[in-house]
Length: 392
Image 1 (tube, helix red, strand yellow):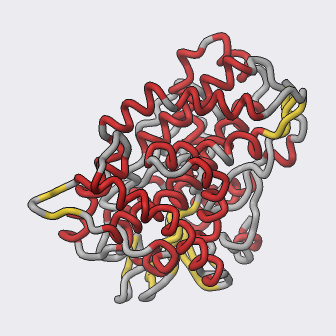
Image 2 (cartoon, one colour):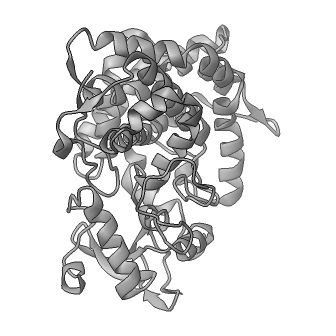
């Protein structure tokens, strides 16, 4: 595959299904754990082995983790903890902003809100024998989870997904991204103001009340944190859920076996996150000085691609890594990153996936995938199926 690797562009090529994994395996085996490649038509480097990627996640000097977020969509989100380069500032802000999603509001919503919301979406699918689980379920659930935990107006729920996609496309269409930012802020601002005077049992109230060492969040800091949640938490959970459903439906008999034995649901979620991660290749930038990493010289300000999908299928860590095997040990998977910018919403993502899967299995214990081609996950950065057309 040597000559093929020379033409790969991880931003522009779709690399559906196993094609991406074949490419990452070829990079690792033929060119080593760090190799030259392309991203957005520009020279880049891809890190495809588990050992090298784990080191890279932890190396904040050579690969400052805030740079990519600062460059990519800070303009559409505002300043938040993932784009802060100062370690002390980042730590304080993260302590202020992220515990709300590990709090009693999350615990209560998980117990009382997630399953009814998933059932509500199944009800919305109607009585048709054939439905698309992407359009009707996985593309809707993550945004509804976030908005309802926050306590945002339900009449605006249909707009959150569109705002998130526009924010993520800030580099390509900054005008649309700025418009989405303004519309989301207009929806959010009166809610924040109301919670300052009359707190409720929701996440915005907890963000308003948060305090660390005498420091609390301003309205704009709360706005930027919430604006961040939809494109990051929403899009990644949307992809994770779609990939999970694809994994179960494309392996013959797996859906029915899981319906008969739902005790395996959590293990199925973990294996799906390893086998087909929603952020298969995470773009990062190298620092302002040239660096040498794993024997490779990396010029200053280079694109460096953290191939999480490659690490999660590295045979040095996972036995028979290309097989989807529920129950294997996935504790070394790098799906949610490592280090200071590791994903703070991993618990919510896992619980959203597990609870929604449980509801789908209960309500639709026998599903047949109708269009396998459309269901194949595509793209590298945000990877998910275009459609999951099923007969129930």
